[in-house]
Image (cartoon, rainbow, N blue to C red):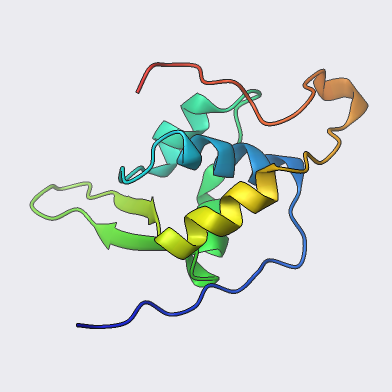
Length: 111
C-alpha cells in the first residue's frame, strides 16, 4: 500500500481559497471539478487555479475522467488535506469591502 505524501501547509490563504475549501468540506469524499465548485461559491470564483495549487500542496488528489471526449480533472480532499482545510476555514479572512460577503460562502445547491 502506498503512503499518502504529507500535505504542505499553504503560506497564505485568501478569502477565495477559503470559499473553495468550504465547498470541498461540504462534499467530503466527493470528486469535484472546477465548474461545479465555481457554481457553489458566492461570488462565483475561478477555482481552477486554486484547486491546482491545493493539489500541488498535497491537500487534494486528482484524477482525469476517462472515456469522455472532454474529460474533466476531478479533485478530492485527502484526509490530511481535510484536516488542514478545517483549520484554514476556522479563521475567516476578511473579504474586500465591495464583496458584501462576511466569510466562506453558503451553499448554493444541495449536494
